[in-house]
Every structure is written in C-alpha cells, then in structure tokens.
Length: 566
Image (cartoon, rainbow, N blue to C red; front, side, top):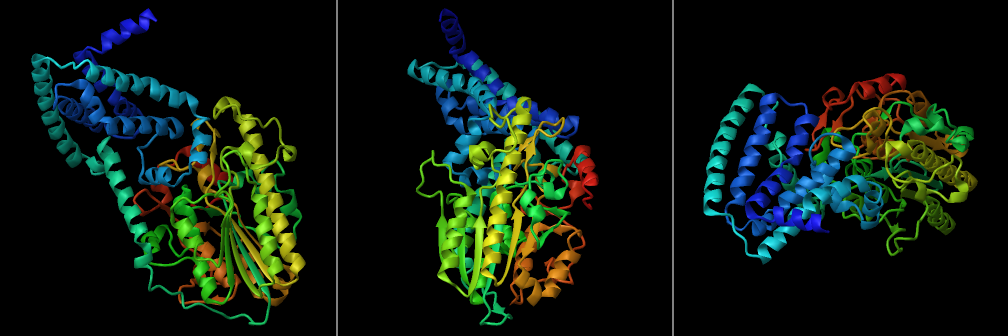
C-alpha cells in the first residue's frame, strides 16, 4: 500500500502528470509506426506533430487535472485504437468500426469484451491512472508552474512547426501519404466524421427512397404455389464446411441432400455485417454502394410481384439498413428483442416461425431469415448435447486455446447444416415449386496462421474473412417446372461470384420476377451470368481490387489452395 502511495504522490505532481499523460496518449502513434507500412519520414511526422499538438493543448490551462478530462475524447480514441491493434494487428479505427460500435447490441459486445480481457486490462492500466490522478489534481487545485508551462509551449511550437514542414515534404514526396488518412488521430477523427455523415444519410432514407419502385411483376403462373427462402448466414467461412472439402465433415446432411448446388469460388465484398447484409438485401454492391440510400430492398421487389413476405431475424435491432429492409416485409420478427441476456436463442427457433407461415397457406411466399450462425461466442450457438467436436469450452480468445475455438466453431457449422437441411425438408414436403439460397455475410479469422488474427471486421481483410459458403437448393417440383434455371445454376457453380452483388439478382431470377433492375450477368441462375472482376468495398464505400487490399502472402496461398480466381 505504501508503494502505491509513493507512486501516486510522485505522479500527481503537475509536471510529472503532464509527462505521464503525454507519454500514454502517444502510445498508439508509436505502435502504428511498427504496424503500418509507411516511410520513415511519415512515421517521424506522425510522432512529432501529434505530440506537439497534444502538449500545446495540454497547456491551454495550467491545471493538468482539468485538461486530462477536457481531452478525454483523445484518451478514448487511443484506448479504442490499442484494442483494435491487439485484435487485428494493424490499421486505424475505420468508419465501419465506428458504425459497428453503434450497431452492435450490448450482449454481443459483452461476449467479445469478456474474451479479450488481457488487452482491455492493459488499456485500463495505461489510461485509468491518468484519469484518476486528474481527478485528484482537480480536487487539490494543482497547477503547472509558469516556467514549465512556458517551456512546454515553446517546445510545442517548435515541434509543431517542424512537424508541419516535414508533413508537407512527406505529402509531396510520397503520393500515397495523406494527413487525413495516415496521421493518428486526425485520420480517426476524419473517419468518425464520415460515420456521422452515413448515419445522417441513413436517418433520411425514408425521404430519399420514397419514390423508388422495382416495377416488379411475376412471370410465373399466378395459380401456382411457390415458396422461396433467402437465408443470410453470419460469420461462416467456406474453408470450415465439409461441403467445400474441409477435412471434417461439418455438413453431412447437405452433402446427402438432393438439389443442393455449392458454389466454390464465392467472395464477400465486405467483412462487416452492417455493410454486407444490406448489400445482400438490396441492389447495392461494392461497385455502386451509395445507391442504397435511394432504393428499396429485395423484399419490396417480392411485395410488388404479389408475394406474401416475411423477415425473421435471430438478432436484435441494430438501427442499420438491415432493420430498414427487414421492415419492408408483411411479417417481421426479431427473436432476440425482449429476450433476456441469458436466454440463448438458437437459429433453429427461426424454423418455428417458418412453420407458422407454411401452415397459413400463402400461395406465393418469400421469407428472409437472418441467422446468428457462427458469430462469436461460438460455444453459445448450439446446444451442449449437440456438440460433435470436443473439447469445445472457450477459456478466452487466445491462440493458446485455438483447438477448443476450432471445435466450437466447427460445431456451429454442424448446427447450420442441421438448420438448412430442416428448412429444405419442410419445403420439399410442401410439394410445390420452391428454392432456398444461403449466403454468409462474411467469414472469420481464428488464429489460423502466424499473424494470429481473430474475428472479422478488421480494416484489412484476410482470405478467411472473404471466402464464404454460397449454396442454392431447388425442390424436385421446381426442377421439373424450370429445368433451364436449374441447369444454369449447376453450370455456373464453379465460376467466380461476388456474393453481395449476386444474391438479389439470383433470387429474382429463380422466382421468375421481371424488373428493369434485374441484371442477368449477376444472376447465377441465368445462362448469361459472368462477372469480369470482383471488388472489396473499402472503408470509404469505394470498390478496391484484391491486389490493393493489403493482403498477405498467407492469404494468396489460401486463394491458390482453394482455387479462388483473383
């Protein structure tokens, strides 16, 4: 206790508190010098200029305790940045990450935080003492000496001036360097501004899309009964599916199921749910994402074509386009809304809602199911008695426990296999023309190689986050009535697919819905299918070629192994 008291009395001295705070707030800048691929001159700029500005701001008032709390937003950004660097290994806080924070529910966030205790604890150890010392400094009414303040300002002005000159030189010398993109925390503040801008655009979506219409009509026999289901998977990666050659048979039921076509070369255009799922549910794609603010989703197209529509989700409201497009349906249910945090709802419970609709006897039916799939914490995505691969208990998110994490993750795929097979059985029993399309929003890193990457949504994606399962199932009745569509599906199964761009066009083609917005070249159910190149959407909603994503050799090795065309 005496030791803590001595440390406290030493650091609470205003001048020392100033130095401690400045050193702590600069830790992300120092770490980024090692994680980001920038020139030596750029790294020097990214140290000198921010440190000088921080120091200058800190001396606006001579009360260090007060300034620590005035500058708390910078503390928060620094802590957030360090957590992300721990998780992903590189890159700054992206626009999507800010939006993820806004759209991730409390229970989901708690699951993650509980499993990254080391870095969370480290961040608290680094920054919490400064905040506490700041409070005591305020209470004790302590001030920086005039001499120290004057000296600090003088060095700050010199440092800031030098930093500005070096930054100008760097910007001229290196065309890829831009202050608003490459200097922390300016780049993060810029991304935060973009996040607010996107939130504003989404908030006004109802106005900007009010006049949109698909002008959709059904070309199928009006008296014919037909049912179509779109299943949106969560965090499922193709390399963990037995159907895609994984050494473990994680999809035994789908392997036996007649009518299933698994597309081998499918890549997601985004590794974040709040971007990927809305693209799946709309005409937006990496090549033209901003149209999402002016157009309606796939459910509206089926509405116009005379279908009874439903959107059933095993997630909570997240105030994103997922909610907006889902609410276009005639019947909307979010299973987790109203449920307690301890109530672990399985995706299988979505089938109960499907059963209710099937029993209602709708002649034309379109259902969208948004699952929780393989989202971390994996162990909570399936019943304990259904575990196939053990041990599957998850101590914490660490590469030391990878075997348990993999077992638990693989069990979630087995659970998805049961879930999809159950849906297909229900549709087959109806005896009508029916089809099901399953596509995951993105994949997941699970400490797969020396990079020790974990989870998804990282600013720089990996093979494991990009290569996803994409399957189409058609009933026997559908195959008899529409053999040309089934032939096209099978003919296209090994062609490159950009999942987010293809889902809506594929579903419309399968269902026989005619609309000016249907693009056969993007529909794997069309004999005209054939995309020339694929892109990934970046943090600023722009399409990026794969070779400019910052992928590592480990990723390209996996692309070659799984025969993914670049």
